[in-house]
Length: 53
Image (tube, rainbow, N blue to C red; front, side):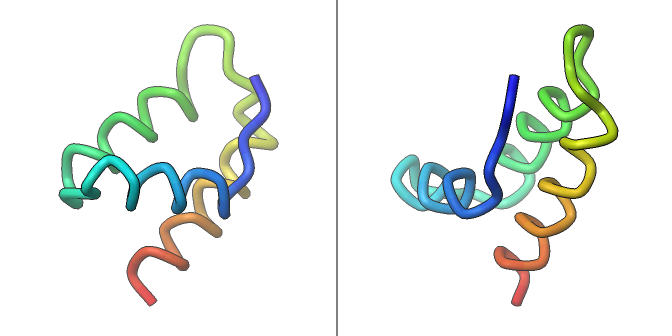
């Protein structure tokens, strides 16, 4: 699975981003069983930077 930080932010806003719930779901995907952890970690860091900026 491939992720893009801007797409994550757009989707989070569309779904009424509630902070903890969205971050929890995102982290479950980032480190999930079939995840590309090395790639996803960078995307997750950028996403969190955008969210909390």
